[in-house]
Length: 122
Image 1 (cartoon, rainbow, N blue to C red):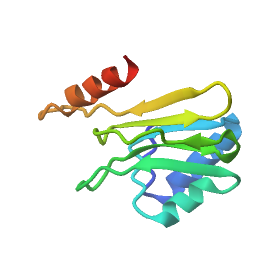
Image 2 (image 1 turned 180 degrees about the vertical axis):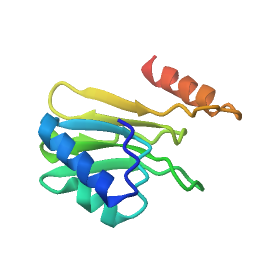
Image 3 (image 1 turned 120 degrees about the vertical axis):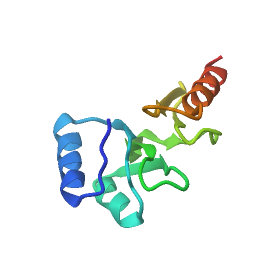
C-alpha cells in the first residue's frame, strides 16, 4: 500500500482503513515516516512498525505495520533501501518482503533490488 502519510489527515485515514479492513499485517511503500511522532500515531492499539527510510531523500520509505501478537522479527538487513524482509515466528516460519521499484529508474536501483530479491529467494 502506498500511504504517503506526511499529512496527519492521511495518517488518520490509513489507521481507520486498516482497522476497518481487520488486517494483521500491512506492507507499506512511500511511508514518509520521518519522526517517532508519526510512527506512534500508527502503532496505537497493539501494532509495531518495522521500516526503512530512504537515506538522503526527502520522501520514500518502506516498511510493515504488524500486529504485535504476531511475533515479527527482521531476519537480516538488506543492502537495498527498497527491500525489507520480516519473519513471522512460530514453529512454521513465514517470510514476507516489501519491495519498492522506483518509477523512471535511471541509475539501476530497480535492477539491484530485484537481483538481491532473487538471491534471497533462491
